[in-house]
Image (tube, rainbow over all chains, first blue to last red):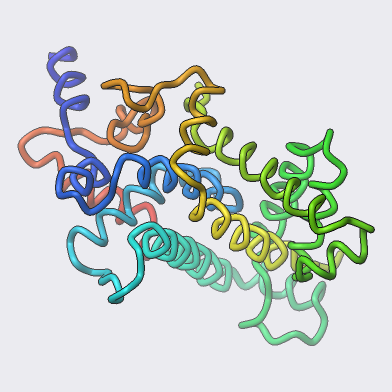
Length: 193
Length: 82
């Protein structure tokens, strides 16, 4: 029985596999989206994995609850769907947090006069801080990459990042290529046990 | 204790990196896979774990069968929807 279950599970088509069968995406797109899902899973609550994000995005497209705007390629469209799923997850977490009066009082006390609807979720902030540190560690041997990531997180333009860190355009472009290669490698690696 | 907006910083950064990965060429993807010892052109390549096939905890969490697909779909929905 167990073997039969495992066999069924392996044969069962995921929404992403269905999309591939329907030629909505190519195999290259799937790998690109895998890397993007892994990227966006950074900063999600730990109980939600990158596969949940990726497969849910495909499921929503297949069931028709998300429609692709004309002229938009499938990969950026699905990346946008993943982003909106992620925003839903955090909206839900914020709603749940608001239902705990004690937590609300603490939040008000620690964040001053900010309106409650604008308050960041402490769990969200903590996870985000950890992920920013993890990304920084990923590029621990590459000072230029760290400077660029910090600048992007601050919302600086490429020109501003170059000026602030004395980088030439060539330095910037070649560092962006290294960042992309490492992120792709991180995105495609096998799941950790 | 004050909360700084780490979440906003992370989202800004991820959005930029997402755009970058969206534009990655097939050659770059293949090169990254090769560095990991994977060959995406091979049937059953590990590169597609979690994408076209589920492995690890997902395999145990989702129970396929006659109604497996809809049940798994519901599980995802429960995970992420209010």
